[in-house]
Length: 185
Image (cartoon, one colour):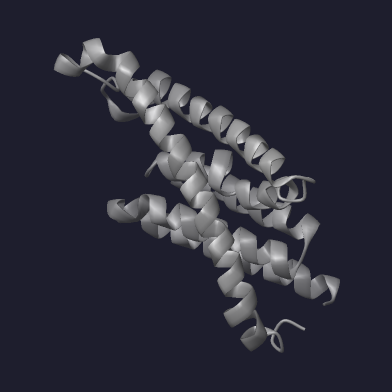
C-alpha cells in the first residue's frame, strides 16, 4: 500500500473515531460502547497500515475528541485518550514478550496504573465536572471500601476488554480481512 493511501486511511479512521465518540456524547447510554468502537478502529489501523499510522490514528482521534467532546461528556475523551485508544497499540507490544505469564503480568501492572489514575481523576475532579463529590451521604463512611472494590472490578474489566479485543482481532483476521483484502491493496 502506498504512503498516500495509508495517510488517507488513517485520516478516515480518525474521522470515524471522532464521529462515533461524538454520537456517544449525545446518546449517554453509548458512552463506553463508542470508546470501544473507536479503539477497534485503532486495532484496524494497527493491522492494516502499521506502526506510525496506528499512533497517528490514536493521537488525532484522542486530541480531536478532547477538543470537541470534553464539554459534552468528559468521560469519553479522557477514557479514550488515557486507556482505550492507546491499549490496542500497547497490547501488540505486550504480547510480543517471551513468556505468556510475563505478558499478563505487564498487562496487569498497566491496568492497575491506568485504573488508579482514572479513579484519582474521578475522585479529584468529580465535584468540578459533575457538581457533586463522588460519594456522599450514607456512602461517605464506606468510601475507601467502595473505591477498593471499584478498583478491583475495573482491573477485572480491563482483562475482559483485553480478551474481547483478542477475539476481535481473530474474527477480523479470519472472516473480514479476506473479504476486504482487494480494497486495501
